[in-house]
Length: 248
Ligand code: PEP
Image (tube, rainbow, N blue to C red; front, side):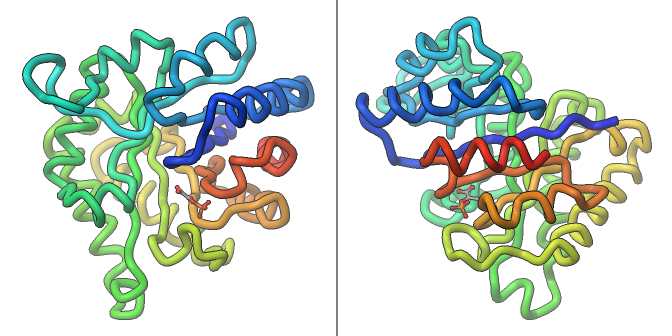
């Protein structure tokens, strides 16, 4: 039985003041939440969140990492540094990193490996663009993105990886995938993993991301292969985020 996981991706939205009120708001409603809950904060706020969530069930994640563990990489942040702030998770392969910062599937696989090697749990984002869906290439795109990681790390690594299916056309657009559209790709992903290991496929959490909100979360999460959500916009309001956390 897979546990529901809800992860918030704050992207580049935070201030010391907003982080305080958002985390305190989430913490105040956590007693009614049975899902695992993760917040992925921008680097400068990891320390603040670490202090605020101490002794709570809330978990911390980062939004990116460098593949190297240390050295002359000005402006970069390593998996070890992320761990140093009590984070257990890190997003890899978010579509904004793939499209805006040129992260290929090879780079994403290397980042996934750096996270796993350091003992972090990567949240590996995959998903097709609008054009790719329209041209019938959704499964091919997702397969290529996943295979890059399976090829570099091996299927066993998926014991410590969370997958997030995020159709690019649904991210930040208000155009949520229907439960049927999402479930179909989630099942495709699970079957793809099952091609290498049935038991790992059954145990791998696959989250949906793309304009999930308090109103549509329950319908999506109730699908048999949707194990929770990766939430952008709606993760910035404690009440909305908590409602999604309770939908699982
Ligand atoms: C995301 O950034 O991963 C995301 C899913 O954003 P939104 O919920 O705003 O679509």
